[in-house]
Every structure is written in C-alpha cells, then in structure tokens.
Image (cartoon, rainbow, N blue to C red; front, side):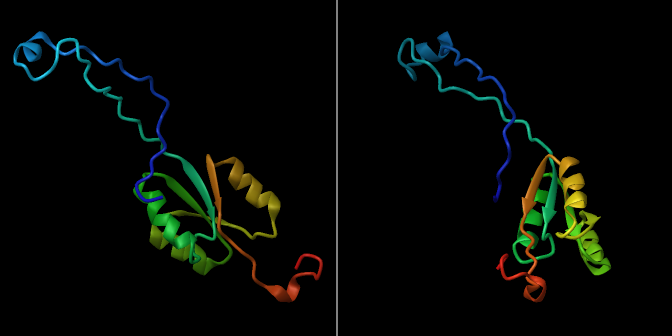
Length: 130
C-alpha cells in the first residue's frame, strides 16, 4: 500500500505535434509525436472503516491510510483502544465484532472497509465454528 493513491477517472489529453521550432533544431524527426502527457490523477480522500486498527496488521495500515490523506475510523472495543486511536489521530467507533448492526452502520457511512480484526477467544467458540 505504500504510496498508493486511487486515481480519479480523467480523460487522457491528446499528444500534440512537435512545434515547428523543435523540428528545425533537428532534435525531432518531422511529424514525430510527443509522448502522451497524462493529466495527474486527482487524489480521492475516502472515509475508511478499519477493524483491528490497534492490532498488529491494522497498526501498520493506519499510517499508510493517513499519509494518503484518507480519514480513518477504527473499531474500538474498550476505552483504552479509544485512547490509543485518538493518539494515532483517528476517529474511534466503539463496538464489537459480535455486533453486526453496529459494524454495518459504520461500514455504510464509509467509502471503504478494511477488516483486520480477529476474535481469538477460543473459550466461547463453538465446536462447529472452529
């Protein structure tokens, strides 16, 4: 994800012919086209909902998203997680993986969702789910 930016849909600009002055200087062959000059893509700032933002993988994704200019909302299960997310400069959504309605509401309010959270409490996991 390092340095990745979502390009905006932009039309390509046509490649203009080489100006007469350059043709006379001998730098270009007659009728040669310049390389295409593409318009720079406009950055798209997205609201990204990130589960597991304080975890091993999520904490590596947060700075990448922020450096790309995106607004990040992290899922927080505790007050300590809310404080940790605030120190990172991101908004916290207080909730649990076991509450799909809360997760869905935050996901609907976002342009992107990255799911890196994992519930590793095997004591409450049923045998069929394992």
